[in-house]
Length: 188
Image 1 (cartoon, rainbow, N blue to C red):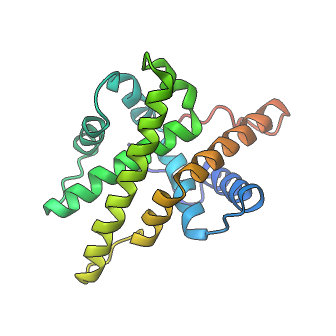
Image 2 (cartoon, rainbow, N blue to C red; image 1 turned 90 degrees about the vertical axis):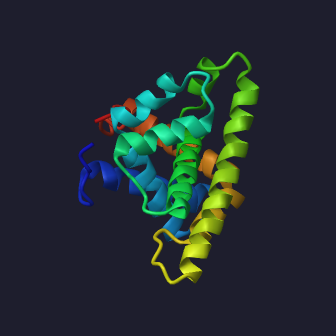
């Protein structure tokens, strides 16, 4: 997948929408968190990332994350790096889908409430594990970016992040219906 550069209008759009939703509507004004979430939205504008949900069907979330890693060519050098990468993908995947497109989760399950709760619990758990693994690497002198505190924040405030991403979606849909650009056609 080709990376979208830092100055791309889509990246700036998401950064502004995330900052607005989180700072003004939710009251979470954390630049590291909002930058991470804007990057997450940009990353998921790729069709490769979106296809994963349909391919996943009834498969467990861990299998989806493992396939994401293999597909991206990311082959961590250590077991700890592999685990950190897998759990980060699970957290990102669950946060994106449960926050931005929760109605799509209902399509892949006969028990829509259970699948949303499973995404929330798996996302929180995954980010908590990443924060511990990132913390261990920071203590070992490795330079881990993003920080363990960011992943702890994502785990502890997962539901707030879901709500905030839902607000971001409502804002881009509102922009599109009011003629403020093609914010609803975000897949590249």
